[in-house]
Image 1 (cartoon, rainbow, N blue to C red):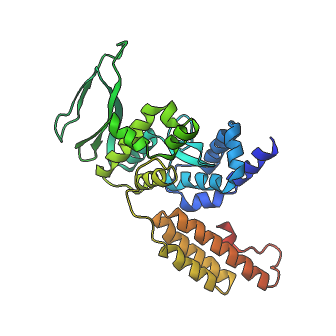
Image 2 (image 1 turned 180 degrees about the vertical axis):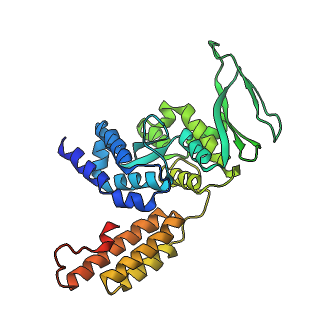
Image 3 (image 1 turned 120 degrees about the vertical axis):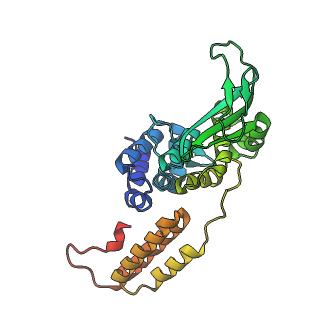
Length: 311
């Protein structure tokens, strides 16, 4: 193992407590997800070099896995680590987004498909799924003309969203990845996997009409902000007062015991809000105040630890 891989591996495994603090899906296992992350970066020299230039981004990406409740397991094809805009980012596939919605019980099943010029596609009203028929063995189904996603809700309703190629490409053209391709010919998923990106774009627009779930909201928000995929966030930015309130209480703590209690109370509220920015800011403040308090106190007895260090 070379030094760069060892460094990134240590960074990833150091997120264990942060991972646990924001974990939204109990079925996710830190050891497995950390292993998938190390394998992905270790197997890509370019991504490894990007990771070394922005190590905090790797930490954020791994922590976001827990907050969103998605897996890096290659067999599931739900999410990936990708180098983008000078940092390693968590990217979520359209299958990952649909899995999140189905896992929550908001929808029973979902299907996203491309429509080609020689296919037969018809919408059948608001309460029935569309008709999409074609010959899978045809040598030429024509060019792609659109994409759709249809879901069945827990109440048995069918919801269908459609987008034309022109609508999809309008979203594509606003993404940072596509702009990098235009200006620098830097390959991106819009070039190598247009169909998959089109399906994800349609899912991201369709979900606004599905029954709401926190995990899906967080995943979409992550893609729209961290991923720079072209759509405006569906919800307003988190209120900065949440982090400010708990950071102030951390600074006011006079003992390590009081600080540990502030940590427990604050992280409970921040975790409920699923606010990663507030979590990172609060954690940094608690660690800083903890160092100040320890420096001002006599050395602890053998075996004594500061409870906040498990944050």
